[in-house]
Image (cartoon, rainbow, N blue to C red):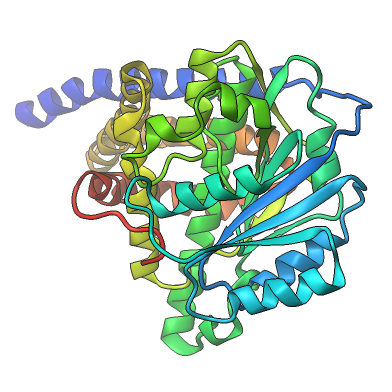
Length: 388
């Protein structure tokens, strides 16, 4: 009995300290979200939408249809075909015949000096004519006002605009929508991917509002062409498979005086197709996590402290709840965490609200722990590929 009481007494400080650290991060992010202020300019510069595409014959027509219907008038679309083996280039050519704003850039051989996607984007930027560059992925679906909503944020001080990216399982290929047990697991995977996107969106919006931008997604990003030139393009990032979004953002923040804006209007949202299989999910997350090794030390330390406090909070809660006298304290800590998480998500991503919001927070937050513990480290081992 004395040993049990002693263990409980030692867990209580761990629980309270980890809860305090975790709530500090969440409250700071909430403050950052509340500090986000909309930017506005009446300038209508020429814009280039640059998209790198590799074997995207299913998704590309949907994206091109959305782009040619944009409400913004002065823009072009540059599609970079990166060694596709399907009908991707033919589809782009067909659209280019009907709409002169569309340009196809072909890459026949893999670059020996730069990772495939960065090389493709670089070629697209070099072929572009726009003062503002907007980026999305071939499997994404922007709103009709997407370009206009991003351009509005480029006042004289802003060099980069970050936007929300929302996963939508309806954008997956029809043949990938399995039935039976496989279909159930696939839909569950999509729900977790959507939830994780909310956390990423909250981290991105909150940190930008605090004046410490470090996270963004290439599926919804825009920056001035002269900003890309000012930091030397992707030359300093050529040894990293990913990082054309967040590592580039961090370089701009570190090396220039340009400010970063975060677009928050519903019109600025880009929907993107989630991966359809667990294997693809792991490969994608390996690619994302691998970039973390190139983050500045202070960002790595803050990320590690954030996740460590979350893990320690869960571990101490479980042990206290399993003990006879620590149930109320453990449940109370869990309730405080869920309340803070829910408030952050609702404030940071109001566009993502839906009826199953609360059940997702409760259940997905529990799954988020093994995800960080077991999937996160995979980004530090093995080979990283972009659409092998």
